[in-house]
Image (cartoon, rainbow, N blue to C red):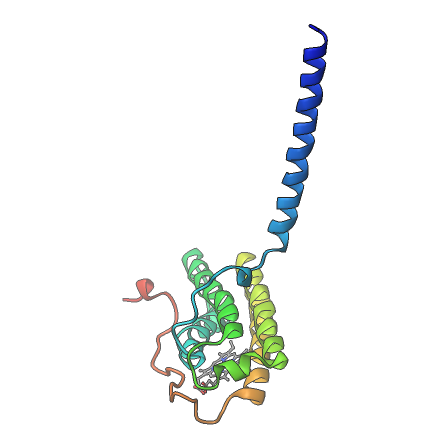
Length: 180
Ligand code: HEC
């Protein structure tokens, strides 16, 4: 009897361990398969037209300016990184579409998604150049990025934007805190 109890306990605990690890593996597998749209998310509260001007265009110009700047201090590189991160995140917003009159038609077109992915890939390369503090690499990545903007615009962008929101020409580029 005194021998029986420990061995039964051992079997029980081995069984329990196996069950726990099987469940563990299953939950890891589920976690790996889960994507953003598998759970509730908040719909975009703004249009693609507004996002293009306020986020995409704004941050992209900062990145291009950084590529052609005469000098880049450590602080300038940090600023460039913030904008490149905004641009990268905006790629997903562009792929989702928002409240604009044509947004949902655009985002359900596979070609739209291809151009959005291309913009995201090019922005990843921009971020790599910024992390390496390599202006030559940044210019090259920036030039590829222009192709992504223009490629999508050629197919989808109306000559007058649906909500009349246009590029902001008076925006000052660079780090606002480093200006006098
Ligand atoms: C996946 C497609 C797509 C990509 C990629 C894209 N755009 Fe756009 N963009 C559009 C569409 C469509 C509009 C017009 C929106 C509307 O009319 O509602 C637009 C509008 C704009 C506008 C406002 C209209 C104007 O002519 O002034 C600017 C500025 C702009 N985009 C800049 C950019 C820049 C810069 C990039 C790249 C960094 C870019 N876009 C990438 C599809 C795209």
